[in-house]
Image (cartoon, rainbow, N blue to C red; front, side):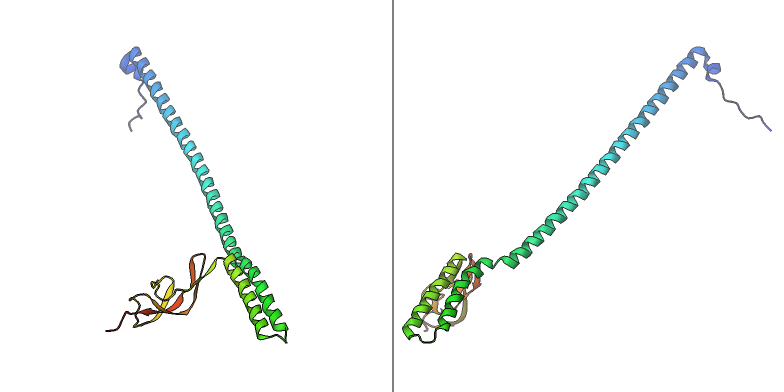
Length: 191
């Protein structure tokens, strides 16, 4: 069985000078390798710290978004629940007037009429305060499909595509149509 090979001393092969240069280059190589490893380790630990920081920021941002979403949902629910409060407050005096009119038994037709007119004025004030407006096109006004609903077309002396007759007033609230005005539209003069 052959004897195991022993490591060869580089000094024996190259001489003393070469040996010293070899040790120096090996030491420098090891030092550079150690520095490179140290640099990679530092970079890795810094990257891991940033990942942890970004993960924390992400979790905080997600929590903030959820809080905003929850608050917005609560605000919408409150707006739906209390959105008509102002309008309801405006209508209470109208109801009071109607109840007062019904409570009086011995009234003349003229007194009833005056009471109804006062109540209608109160209702108009409530509508104005809450941006509720009438849509009541006159005969000859241009038909507007955004605010009018045509029930039928009728031959008339009015130009084609204009309102021939108003059947029911419509209403808008803050420029949004609540109920379109029901109209009959002119098809022009029949031949």
